[in-house]
Image (cartoon, rainbow, N blue to C red; front, side, top):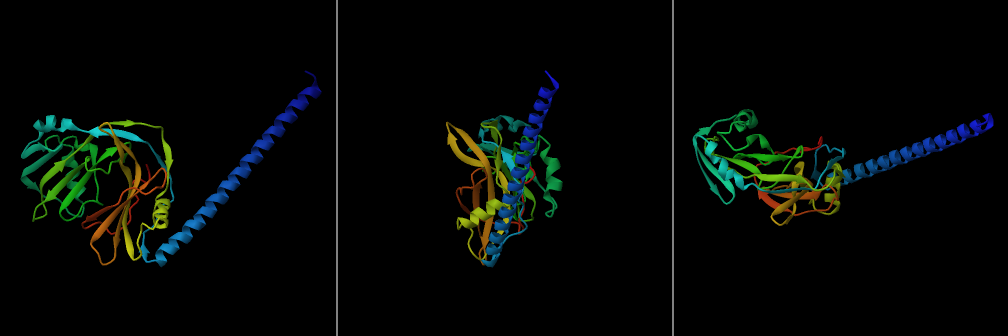
Length: 281
């Protein structure tokens, strides 16, 4: 290859590289512009929410990722009840139902400080390390622990431990359910942010005026059931309370698509601050 030919090859290579870099710069600027425009639009909508007297805390615009997963009810809990001590336990309707012979006292400001060490004991509950404290579902009559999965949690009545409190505020009994055979059905995909979930919920007219967002949490919830296997997806779970009412509505947003799932009406003394739940997962 002569010198002139070599020059032509290098010149062509530099031209291709320059074009590539220019395209990358343009793309990056477009993405920054889109993000800026989106952020500006989001800020405007949040102001509208506040004008409608909808109270929300600071919202995160951080996106994360998640999976489609499957799981089945754990019928093996009944076989592991033999390890439990100092309690009267029975297996009923797929759950362990147990009464403690000696109530457990705890600090109601930080119940996990007392309960977390107990959860590690096989004599206290079954596979306690599979659960974590959920302050949002806990109140003056119960302490709730929910099952962990895929570096996140499961918001499902079939995947939780509910500790019931007596009149002195001590743990007197509990009910435990669990899911097993948790499997990934599809590769990881991006999910919407906490901020985007609240905005879409507002735009769907699912947040009434004169209300307060008590808390949010991104967790896996059941989408459907196929042949006794539940299919779970990342979901933004949002608790909303209208002013002058004790009723709390639980809204769920599909964290993949932003579509609204079912609504639940519950009662309880929920935390009066917004939390981000799984933001770092």
